[in-house]
Image (cartoon, one colour):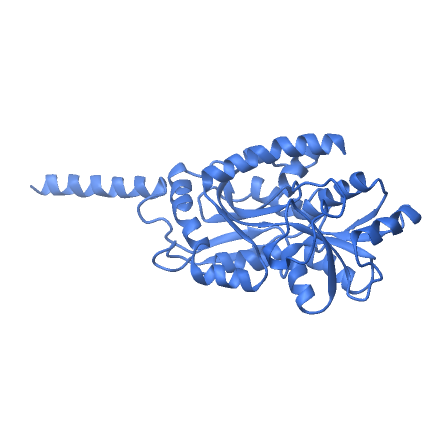
Length: 322
């Protein structure tokens, strides 16, 4: 009898260990970290803190998620670290930005591609917008383009980095308007780029709608156009680029979500993929995102995989043409 009990106990321990390693059972057993590859105060950081605020609830992951910022080079510093040094155990998550990391992998000089990561879920879709200081003489995209034509290369404007959504939007504007602009990437992300506009260090900027929404609410900027196919519910008074005569699509729209490094156990991926979207759909989370002017677009893992693949194809074509 003692032998049977000991054997049964050992079998149960083995099953428990296997289940935990596969991502079921007791996962997670300790707090989780999520890496944001942009600085504190920017749209990605602001939103990441909101969408993970219910992680510790019993009906969510049951453990809190702590945000760690690894900014630099338009996201490259953080994503290079995440793809090469982060543990593949489910306890280190990463925030992704698309088209950013995909465009950067196409351009080269980074250690990552879509094969380096496994998506979990998407929480938002944040269009790029063109902003100018509140006291600027520019009141429309026509004013901006007219100035650029009269002063080739003289229209300075900021963005969050190279080959991020802001830069892609800028390249599209140059092509559609037939002008040469002076794009100045910030080494402090979207928040730094917005500060440059407000301080008058540049004539304008391409930034996230969510950052621009808060800056306009504070009376600091004017928003002249949206790089999307239709107007946004947060600012229905702002026309799209197409409405203003520029053939620009939604390739620069910034999708944000959660991913893990490649090699993470499938059971862990499956558990996260089942739970994380429910966190995004929490009414408190959605209320805070709405109050901050942050558009939500919740997608599950399968939908994100399809989106990543589609954006890879689109960006390869777009960047080759630009």
